[in-house]
Amino acid sequence: MYQKTTLLLVVLNTATYISVIAYYGLGPDFGPNPQAIRDLALHPYFILYMGEWWRLITSLFLHMDPLHLFFNMYALYIAGRIIEAYYGPTRTLTIYFTSGIAGNIASLILPVFSAGASGAVFGLFGALIVVEKKITGTAATVLAFLIIVLLLSNLAYPGQINNIAHIVGAIAGYLTAKAMTSESKKTLII
Image (tube, rainbow, N blue to C red; front, side, top):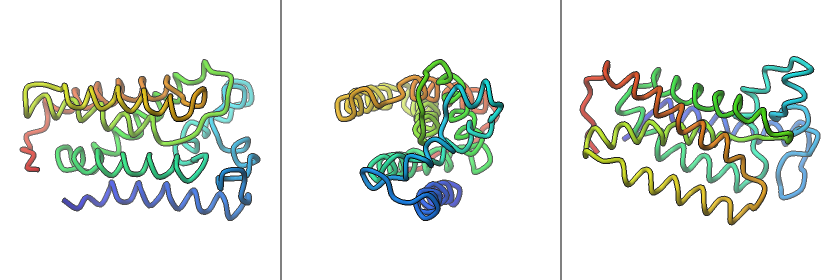
């Protein structure tokens, strides 16, 4: 199942990671220099007080280190291909960006820098709940997967996970997909 939009998102995220390191230099853990995080990541002060609303988007493409990028892109590739096959490229992008931006807006209550595509990726998994429920009658598999991912990521990176972006992203993806499902007549063949 080859899906161009999903592949394009993976390429854009990876190219952004490489470009940021090329421009700002390498930082700790082979990630971008901390100045890149200060200049591009989500932070409530810069958005609410300095008017840098573009950070709601740039932070979706900024990743802290290679593992952060790898796990987000792997999950994007898995969920994105299924969602794109079911909803098509335009609706997939709508789910992706709506979820990522919603997760970032909700994250403004945290006084810390935040970056990564995981709110948007969790949104694709939220949409996958809609697809799984429509096809199988239950969403238990995707829900269990999301809970396991949240638990494992918090164990692996204690205190460094933006759970608000993940949860709100998943909810936004679910709601966006649910609103689109009544219009979708496609049958998913896996």
